[in-house]
Structure formats: C-alpha cells, structure tokens
Length: 575
Image (cartoon, rainbow, N blue to C red):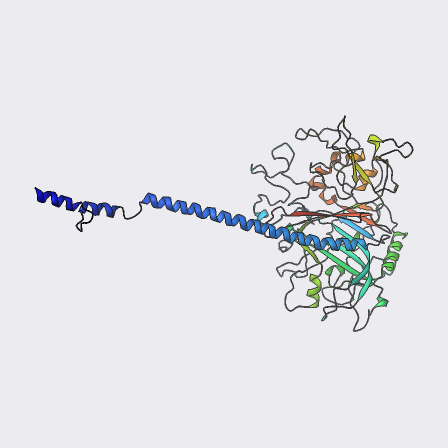
C-alpha cells in the first residue's frame, strides 16, 4: 500500500524525470496555433498593412498635391511678370490690336466642339462626346433639357467653360521697348538683331503629330483627328507667346549671303496692301520646301516697321474697293487660315480654322537652328483655358450722384445714355444684395468679351426686347429671356448687348468684327450646339486699344494630382 502511494506521488511530482503519457499528449496538442487563430492573426496583419498603406498614400498624395501647387505657383509668378511687362509697353495708338475669342472645335464637316481633359476622362465617357456627361448614373448622357430625361447640366453649353469645354482665345498687339531676336539663320543659334518695336501674340499653339503621316501637319488644340495625339486633351494644351521684331529691311542686312532671314512684306500688283508680314500666309525670305510661313515659328523678324504697318492698315481701311465699317473683312487673314478675305458686305461665319503658331517643345538630336526656333514659343504647358476680356470707356452712363444737385440717382445709376465715352471706365451696378427695403448697391468694372458666367448661376443674360419671362420650375427665381437694363447684365457679354439698351436696332461697336448670335430669349447660357459656328467674338482696333485687359487661365496637372486644376486671373492696364 505504501509502495502504491509512493509511485503515485512520484508520477505527479514535477521534479521527476518520468512524465505521464497523458501530460505528453496534452503538451503536444498545444504546441501550435489553431486554424482559427491563424486566420485571425492574418486578418489583423492585413488590416494593419492596409492602414499603413493608407497612411503612406495619404502622405504621398498630400506631398504630391503640394508639389503640384508649388509648380503652378511658380508658373503663375513667372507669367505674371511677363504679362505685366508686355502690357506696360503696349502702343496705345496701336495700328492693330486683336482679340479673337472662341472655344475648342474641330472644323468639319461636321464641326464638333469640346475636348476631354485627359485620357482617363475620355475612357469614362459613354458616347465619346465631350459636351455630354452622365451625372445621375441613369446611363443617359444628355442632351440637357433642364427637366426631362436627363439631369440638368448633363449637356455642357458652349458658354460654360469647364473640363470639357475650353476657351482658346488669341490676343495680338504691338509693343515698344527693347526686344532681342530669339531665332537665327540655319547653322546659327543666336542673332545680334534687336528692335524697339515688336508685335506680340498670345495664343494656344499648334503641336506636331507624333506619327509621321504628315510631319508638316500641325494640329490645333483639341482637333479630333486620328493623327493628333499630342494636342488632343485639355491637359496637353500649351499657351504660347511669340514676339515678332519689326524693322525696316533697310536697317539690317536683308540681302546677300549673310542676310538675316525674315518674314517678307509683299506688295500686291494692284489694290491695297495685304497685311503682310502679319498675314498668316506671309512667307520667309528663305526658299524652302515646304514653304516657311510666319506661323511656322521659324523666324521672328518681320521685314516691316511699325510705322509701315500703320500706313498699310490706313490704306486698307480707306480703300475705295473695301471701305472699313460694319461688314469689313480685311482683318480676317490675321486670325483665320484664309488665302484672301471674303468679299466685303454682310458679315459671314468663317469655317476656316484659326491661324496658330506652330511649336515643337521636344528638341531632338541633332540639335538644329530650326528645332531651337520651334521650341521658343512655349510659355505655359498644360494650360487648358485662356480667356481674354477687355474694359474701357465706350459709353456714357448715369453717375451715382447727380452733378447739379448731388442727389442719389437710385435705380437710374449705371443706365447707359449714349454710345459716346464719358471719361469713366464702363461699370455695372450690382443689385444682387439689394432688397425692397435695403438698398445695397455696388459698382464694379464692366468686362466685355465672349459671354461668360461669372457668378456661377448658369444664366448669362444678354439684351432682349421681351424681358421678364419666368424661367422653368427648376430655377423659379431666375429669368431666361435677357434684359433691357444694363445693370441686369452682370456677366461678361459683348459691348453690342449694352449698346442695344440705348436702341434695340443699334449696330455693334466699330471694333466688334464678329459677335455671337443672340440666344433665343437673350440667355447666352442657353445657346444650342447648332449655333456653335457663330459662337465667337472678334475685336480689331485700329489706332486705339482697350484701356484694360483681363486674362483668365487654367493650369492642369498632367499627373492627375490636382484633378480640377487651378484657375488664375490677371488684370492688366488698371490705373
């Protein structure tokens, strides 16, 4: 009995070297994790990895956005100085000052409008039309009727500028200062030629195709053709600046083996001058195949002085064969790729593409003088919008206080009384914050240009002879039939709309050469795509220029770090 107790005690003694088989089985069964425990631990590791990845992604995105904003800010500062310097040197009694405003289009037939902002943007679209989108997820992309089968806003109207509809304006003017030449003859990379006068253009550039289908065929921004792969999307557009030095050929070496190659001024055998060397088809003295034109960006020296240009423009405007005035067409070859202007008379809608300077930002080896010259026009890459508007003293308006009695003029403040200047920059009196009991009025500069919605209500009132018709039910507080009162036209509109508040039959101002067709009811925000060919606004001044210029542009991030890009605004010439 004692032996039995001793053995039993020894078998459970932890100091004993003899281990009970039952304990061995228990220990071996707990030597690893169970399947459930492994699955839980793996899930925890995965969750931890996801969390760490998100933290690093957020940090990376934040840093990337910061870099993108920094890049755009640097571009903004540099271009701001260039804008300021150029417009400080504008010749105020300019023989020519040009603003041509329009949207991206591909000349047909049929003519199409709009452009996707990126390849990713195009891949998400259902019907391939940039101006329609599926905002409500019902599988239907426009057309937008405001209250029908598609959600309001699914069709981008021509006067709404966004990621699918891009403004590609052109501005050109003479400037006086000190300008150096940035191109040179073949075999040379610099030139010592300088000038006190230059004609400066700002515009989106035409870029070359990547394929070799036709290496001489450069494509305009957003041109929807198969060969255009470098200038198809808004984020690819490049804003350019071209300063063309102006000198009389007798003041530099213009002939002989050491001649400075330049753009020639040619004199027709009969009739008035033809605007060479600013005519888009003006050719260089260098004999090449294909022909080197002013738009080829090969040479930036014009064989004509500023005074010669002034005389040529005067001769053209005073020509008996094509007198200047409403319906004049002499200016067309400055803006459009037309061989000759159309016959004077009733204004026509030109189907020709805009004449743009060519540019190849990629300089390949071997480096040549031509390759260097082709890269010179680049000012701002990834610039999807370039909007130009102007302000000045074009009409007489009722002042805030009566000059004789000093009494407040109330609602009459800002009314237009005549089409003559009154010594004050044109203004609009904003009644937005006024009520029947509280008069809260503010006057601000009136800007003229291609219609643009500046207050974000998708409604751009222009002049109408029958205002006051209520809008559809989805916008009960608005009016969609225009206005008779200039203070109700708070957005950017052509000067012609303001002149028609004096007389509904008034003609456009003398400098207004192309004006958009008034929309049905007077709301420019409702202009249909069918009226797209006429949705343009061209102004050409002779021996004068606008007092102020406003430039609005948008920069895109090609890496997609800033999906909505960034807008910048510049007011130039302000006192």
